[in-house]
Length: 171
Image 1: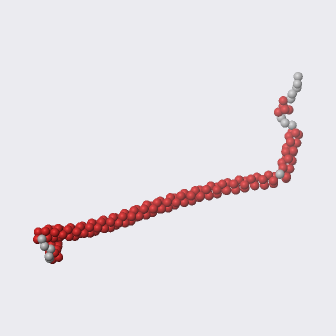
Image 2 (image 1 turned 90 degrees about the horizontal axis):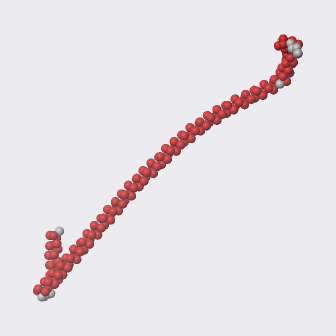
Image 3 (image 1 turned 30 degrees about the vertical axis):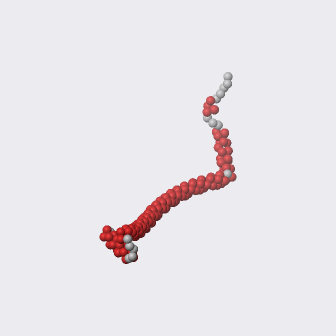
């Protein structure tokens, strides 16, 4: 059988322990002498880069928020300007409509007035023509009744005066 000393396995050997501690101390001192400054410099540089990246991202976020606020204010300003332009165009259209309607009414009144004047003028011409026809008919009838035309000019004036007097009483 195998004879194994369990106590020796459980308790470490003192000389081995001292050698291991010395070798660990030597490794630590060598690392501190040759690597410590470079590792510390690397870690500091990494920390500074992380801090600058965090600061840059915070600044970018602030810039983005500022740009967003600026865009919103410009959008509101553009919206209000477009509303003003539309309102001005609507008002201008209403003014033009009023002007056009007023001008159309004036032109219609002028056409009506001219038509009334023309109708009145034609009525007066027709009335004069009718008076002349009446005088001619009366003269012809009187000439046939009397049979003589000696004083036709004087008779025509008398009948014309009578017709005018009769027409003046009718109006």
